[in-house]
Amino acid sequence: MWKFIHKLASPPHFYGLAAKIIPWFFLPGLILIIYGLYGGLLLAPPDYQQGDAFRIIYVHVPSAYLSLMAYSIMAISAGIGLIWRLKLAHAVAAAAAPIGAWFTFLALATGSLWGRPMWGTWWERGDPRLTSELVMLFLYFGYMALRGAIDDTAKADRASAVLALVGAVNVPIIHFSVEWWSSLHQGPTLMKKGGPAMDAAMLYPLLAMILGFTLIFGALLLRRVRTEVLYRERRTRWVRHLVLSSAVEKK
Amino acid sequence: MTDNQPEMPGLGRGMMAVAKRDLFLAWKRPGDVLNPLFFFAMVATLFPLAVGPSAEQLEFSGPGVLWVAALLAMLLSLNSLFVSDFEDGSLEQMLVSPVPLAALSLGKTIAHWLTSGLPLVIVAPILGMTFRMPASVMGVLMLTLLLGTISLSLLGSIGAALTVGLHRGTALLSLLILPLAMPLLIFGARTVSLAAAGDVVAGGLYFLAAYAVLIVSLAPFAIAAALRISNE
Image (cartoon, rainbow over all chains, first blue to last red; front, side):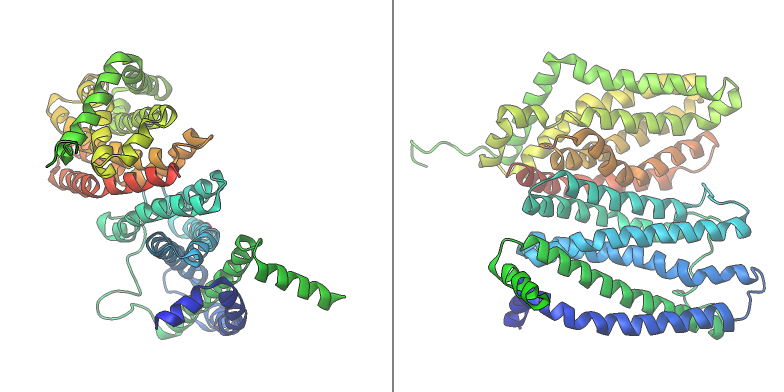
């Protein structure tokens, strides 16, 4: 078991392995998203209250979910990197941050587009969920800014890991804020007692979208980690060897 | 214990020694303490000028304005928290000291709170009066600020420790700390507003107290870890 983990954490091995895994994340993710879009935009019936406008849920919910998910992955791998000094874990944390920030932005943008016809406003200041999602974006920005401000990679890794862990204390507060404050934002639909409050024709495309987004996120993350590893190991022999052999092949 | 081995100072004594030293330094340079305080008063005075003098608006915005001003004033005072120690090398002495760094950083934070948090709490009722807050709300206002500034001192120290050796530390510190301080601001300002409306305030106060307890117990370790990383 330990041997396997050690092997996995060695950069050259991971670099090769990730290349093989990426298609297994990417293709099923793509298929699920195509099904989800078809089912959600064309097959699912319009909502009795919101009409066709509810269909933005198929992008909004997966993005919002992934903005939290990416932060958890970032904080957990930062913690692993800090405790066991695994370089690969730090590379994962560094790679997860920009993707998470984009999903957070996507959740905010779609939420704002959705809010316009439903609540009559682009940006409802009183809503804690919107505000906390924006805070999430600032947490990502802070993390990336701290990383950018420190030149030494090892030091940047460890400093930003402390920040990610401190920020992780706030993530549960953000998540449960929907129950703490009464607001315009609708309550939880998927995760509540007595099963999801949604018609099956609407629900299955949504679940497919969530799973598909997650798989695509996995593929993007692995791809970014590969680049990150390559950049961090740029002075090592195996990278030089890799670059030289690929240059020879091209000739 | 043999004679040539110096006696090891206890946790509490090391912590108090650092706190005393910082308080003494603050006494010698009162500007560092007064500037954030003036800043607090200025923001609270400027705001009504921008919004207008109507009594309703003042009463409505008072708690929020005071809380935002306190938050920014705390942030202002945090910039210099570790800088002089970092420059003259006393921070390195703390790193190699036999007393755990977490205890020493807690000592520094205690001194920081006494010199920048506590004055805000004391001045707040005077500024509250200019916002036409009733006397009955003052107690709640001071209590929320008391609990809130303790948390802000510790939370901000983590940020200050992370940014201590960096060139663009000031702007970065705000970016790191303000999002984390958001729950404090929401609960602090809300609780004061509720008190002004004659509502029950226990929930908000409990939250602020719980947050303060959580951060007093965890933050010193984060500050210590951050200081070690910044001094590598």
